[in-house]
Image (cartoon, rainbow, N blue to C red; front, side, top):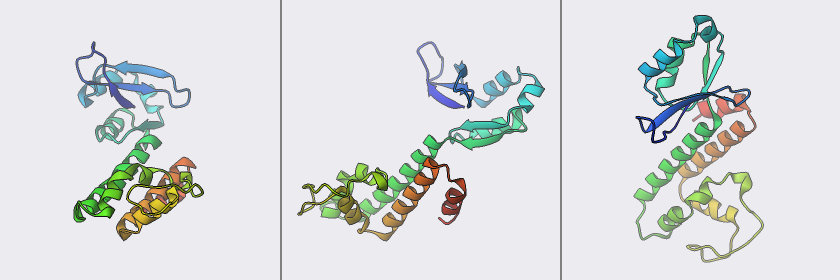
Length: 187
């Protein structure tokens, strides 16, 4: 289950799509996404078919678990990995922006955090630790890893958030759900 941008023929800005999670085959694309309309639509399927649905993979839209509970009584809701990683990135950026607001806008740290935010979102294991180059706001040649380490050295909360974000993203990538849950619950 997910929302997609509607075409001109739809009445709403967003439409609702659902697919078979195993085959990735599109089952239907609906020109609406309100819970009332979705309930009405899914109730056209017989009760036995709806009870046979075991897993619903979706984003973090708060209405879908309610819909699943009412229409698919035996299904569990699983949030898809893309939306989990997206939420982790947003949480990290909130921490970074909060730190930036506490810094003087004329400071080197502020400008570096503003300039290299994408580098901070790069998975730690994808950072280049060999190639030295000149970086704006850094008076010496450094690797991407050096720049990230310097930025994380500005604030302990930023470093902790970065470490947790990278640990959770790695757990998602490797589908290591026990360690994901352990890291998530130790926040």
